[in-house]
Amino acid sequence: MNTKLDTDYWENRYIENTSKWDLGEVSPPIRSYIDMIENKELKILIPGGGNSYEAEYLYHQGFKNTWVIDLAPTPLANLLKRVPDFPPEQLIKGDFFNLNDSFDLIIEQTFFCALHPKLRENYVHKMHDLLHPNGKLAGLLFNVPLNIDKPPFGGSEEVYRSLFLPFFNIEEMSVTANSIASRKGRELFFQFVKKA
Ligand SMILES: C[S@@+](CC[C@H](N)C(=O)[O-])C[C@H]1O[C@@H](n2cnc3c(N)ncnc32)[C@H](O)[C@@H]1O
Image (tube, rainbow, N blue to C red):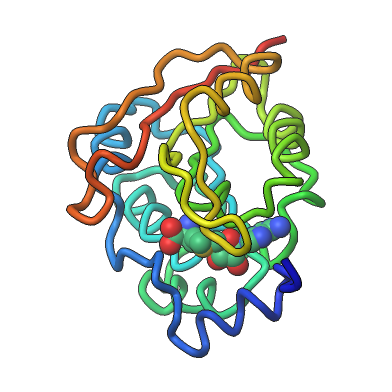
């Protein structure tokens, strides 16, 4: 793969409007998951959040301690346009791998599949570092192979188990029933709890 998956690459996807992953709304399995969370005080991160409909939904549901990090400035600006009272300091323009903070919950939504597979172990370590004790990483992962030379990169339940199990207890990982039509049967909803 020659393409560098850097800020310019991602920012251009948004400027050229080739952000095909963008659902234009909160992903239904994640919305259902958020609807079950009672503690509105949780500090929540959405890494590689893009236009961050999930952050918008969380914020409107009263989860005011919601944070987003993304390399690309345009989608963060878009979120602020849609939700003008979203605290701008909670929208971080930067590299997830350089983030120094800690969270109760991190929500995954087409960020893992956007990263080159060589970064997968770094992703697992970084998620572990960013979570409070007993913190949770939850969200969606594709369970189909997808591309080998450019995002989205796919995977399987077996691959994810061997990657995450050394650092997380796997509370749930199963094909979700309420994916959008084009992703039906192709994504796993998971909840991984940080091991000590
Ligand atoms: C496929 S998009 C998904 C965006 C959003 N989660 C969604 O579902 O619409 C991947 C996002 O990750 C961001 N990204 C890629 N690498 C990143 C990194 N190292 N740190 C922060 N953001 C990154 C990109 O800018 C892009 O917005």
